[in-house]
Image 1 (cartoon, rainbow, N blue to C red):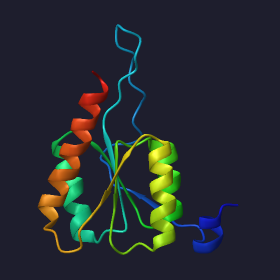
Image 2 (cartoon, helix red, strand yellow):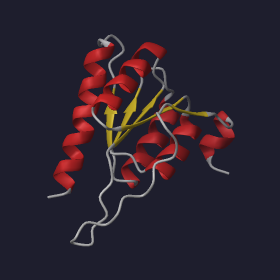
Image 3 (cartoon, one colour):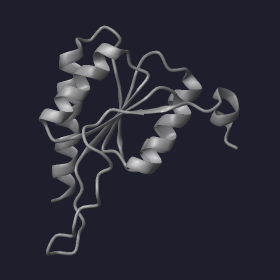
Length: 138
């Protein structure tokens, strides 16, 4: 059992998506399998999470909200996100564990400001996810 799991216990993952589980995309003619960008937010309040969900749906970006460090690490492993956004309510140990998991999955880690407007945060996260995905496709 990892340090984060021992320290913080298990935490529930709260998926915030429309539909169900996404299927794996078909490979392109070059043989590379392309996937949609995914944003995971951790430790944010409900207003920011709702704004991110709306922006993600409009931008055709996957969205997952995790409440704590353990759930976020599991979500990162399963969803392979493009961007992981960390709220200001997380403990230092949680932040470090989540950032390490995100970097090992190749995701960009973004630290969110506590006083930033929810709509601006949501748009910036979706744009970052789309930009990183387009840059990765060449």
